[in-house]
Image 1 (cartoon, rainbow, N blue to C red):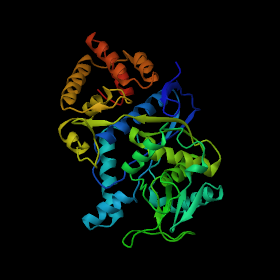
Image 2: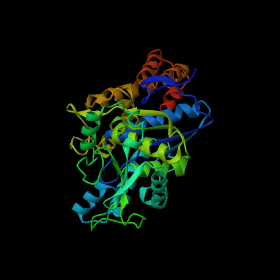
Image 3: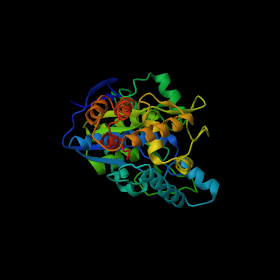
Image 4: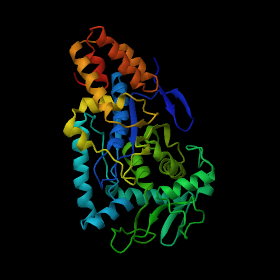
Length: 372
């Protein structure tokens, strides 16, 4: 059976048929606070995808970046009175421990934004040379009017783009922009912020540029699959695609994949809202397999209204699977469900049925990263 996955830009489920080596880029954390359940849900999705791809005989190379310099981490470091890189190192180490505890496959690489300043400077030069960017106010901006395909990923109209850009750090009122939707590639640093020398003056990278530069450096011109949370579709991934294709003249991503939001109390779980469930707290009370099953019980695209009862249901499910013992029951059924747009709820039901019939399904559970 051919794997089929929903593709965000095309807005339909399509065959996913990469070569033997599958290149994947997932947007990583900005390490200024503890990892929360939204992180776990996103990275678990790509973990299960990789497990099935490896089961099919592919080699997966999944890069997950670390945004160790941007507005959020600098603001938090300033408030704590610590160096931003010390804060980043502490939170990154804590994040890595938590992801290992959840049983995630190791990343192919985990590059930091600050490791890529020369790459970023070179990339910005390519965008300027292509005629898709301009200098103003000591910074460099991408000119969205010069790129006809801007908006093809998100399919949003201008009003919706402006609203989301303002909500998600786009600084639409920046007087140096020709258009409020133009986005920064390089910006002057404030007096207490880190700064690097550049042809356009001392400063630091914009948010979107690091991922394009790192993806190009780590995986090449075109990535098989790029993903993250659904909140990254616009502006982050839309801007990534525009600047990458403007710079290289090549398609940036063959397949875009996005994970629905985790909600708590009816609102998206987010640091800015403060309605977070932290991975550390869950791991203190539940074994990792329970957390994985609680998240996998809902389809990755659908999002999830989080409730503690989901962990209780997952605990009971895990116990039933373990009582059934070891075996390869439901393995083909689980493979089929994962090949159908990563239908993890269907995969769980297939193992439930095997366990209820007294047939061990440890091999099928392992394909989901659950060891019985």
